[in-house]
View 1: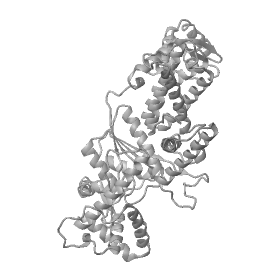
View 2: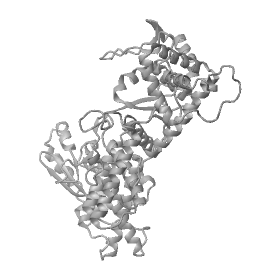
View 3: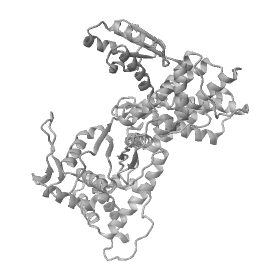
View 4: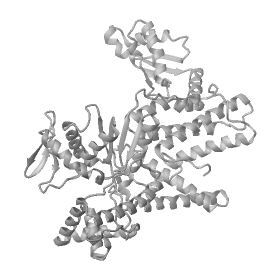
Length: 593
């Protein structure tokens, strides 16, 4: 289904052509003066120099060709040469009815869909999720859903930090505390226990303790490095302990990500590519890409067009140990060999921009990816407190993600109770708790996603949980209001099927229709630009347009049956569009609020 602006532009291009001008001058855009018109065309201004004619004269000639247009109800040529446009009620009505019947509201699905792998989440095992993990999970999940909805094959990979010194630290601390564990008996040849010798709570305490000890005690750090070496060399007991760490951590991570409505197709980590690193390094050496520099193995990635210094990409440290660069390059190689993606998208803090520039260039230079493979790093900004500094707990610590979710839910329950008290009805605590969970998640996710990913933003509990303004709860409240009207309509014994949207009878209805008609262009842009904030901006405008229409229109008490049916059809499409959009953002709406 063609986008609305494309259809309107085609009508305008024909008019330019009939008036004797280049048809490409007829591109129509949304009006930047909505108080004057709905759309505008500036082609006459652009054509004035080419045709040596006053732009207003060109605009007037084109306007004359549109006198009997089925698309434009009003066409005005205004100084110095703009064409101000309003489309007919019949045209927008037909467009929406076609949109309502079409799959995905007429969104054009690509003929050659891409296979995309999105690398997001990236937590370290044995550590609790904190607020610093929020943005990667929330933004990555939304991008995954948007690209999948747009027709692409998408694989989401969490890419766990599950290898390296942190594992050695945990194993060392376990050995200090429980030296008699069977995992440390080199002579043991039997099966290891199925149950881990620690809980997730104990594990989360062990790592920071071990980390602190290693910074203060060189001997302890040496033991941890030795444990890391043994693990990576395949010592049975150490590998078994490591598997326990992974299993316990992943179970907890899944529970916490589930609370955020974030899921992954792959739960791979750095460990999955450990064994292919030596072969990759050897190939880089053979190809003449990798060379020694101060004992380390590096690949030059600078280019002649660089305006700033881009250091070499280090492949191995001077002691032969691998780095994040090594693991990420091996992961790219693994993904290309096993999944053959057309595009790789990475979600991390924007401060890693140079790092990913180095890794991507190295991957291209050494032939790890195909020439046409897209490599994209989306760097996101920081979630800050009201003081403008990275978000902390009241005592200055890093807040655990589950605590942030709990605080949001508690605030939502408080507001639900307050609202019930104001309106004089009893609160069903179980229902209120579930509603608070749904609305709280919308508050967190919309609060994050409504910002352009690269920008820092202020986490403001009061604003994010408000039922007014540009917030998740406001969007949900709008959806629930529409659901309530539709429910009351069906309670009157009426059906929601086979209804047709009629011509708008007032400005607020037409404005709502025009907002709905922007859907396809918005969704296409959100996918192409991997920009969830475009969906947020769209549904906020759509919700506002609906609420203006609702306050000006007595929908259920309308006596004209055809008019009422038209409005119910319009509300049904509005609800459906809003619910698809919030699902792509990663949250849903309750039936009641």
